Image 1 (spheres, rainbow, N blue to C red):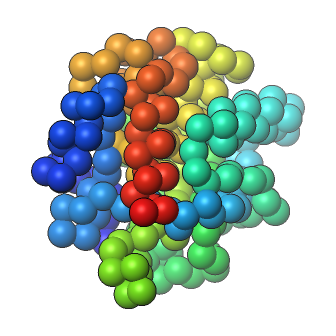
Image 2 (tube, one colour; image 1 turned 30 degrees about the vertical axis):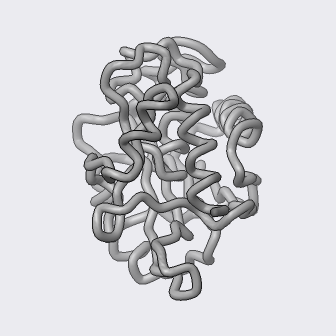
Length: 216
C-alpha cells in the first residue's frame, strides 16, 4: 500500500491534456484512486506539540483550507474530535485506532513518524483498500503530518508561503492528487515556494476529476 508513485495512468493522460495541469497519485497497479463518492471525511487534528498561544490561529488556517477544498471537491472535509495520534506506516496499514473515512492531521517533530521527510516541512497521502463491489482501489484513510519546528517558516493566513497554502497542498495529496511540474498557478508545485499560494485551475480540475473517478 502506498501513495508516492508519480506515474500517470495512460487512461488519464488525455484527460489531463484536456484540462489544465493536474496529476493523480498512483495506487494499485498504477491506478489512480479516490475517496468514496460524496464521502464525508472526518479530519482529526493533533495539536499536542503546537504552542498553546498558536493553536487558535493554526486551527483557523486549517478551517480555511478545508473550506477552500470543500468548495470544489466531491467530498466534504469536516473537523472532528481532536486526537493525540501521530500517523505511521504501521499504524495506518493496520488501521490501528483509525476509522474509515478519517484523515489524521498531526503536528509532530522529526523522528516521530517514518512518514515524515527529513527535508520537507510537511507530507500528505492516503491508504487504499480494494473495493470488491466497485472492483477498484478506494482511499479510506488519509494523513497530513506537519513538522512543528518548520511551522514558523510559513506565515499565518493566506497567500505566498502561508500556512493555508501548506495545509491545502498537503490535504490535496491526501485526497489523491500529486505534484505538478510546470504550472505556476498550481498550489501543487513540488516546492511551495514555486507556487503563488492559492489553488489554480489545474487544482480545481484535478478535484473534479477525482470526483468523476469516485462517482462513475
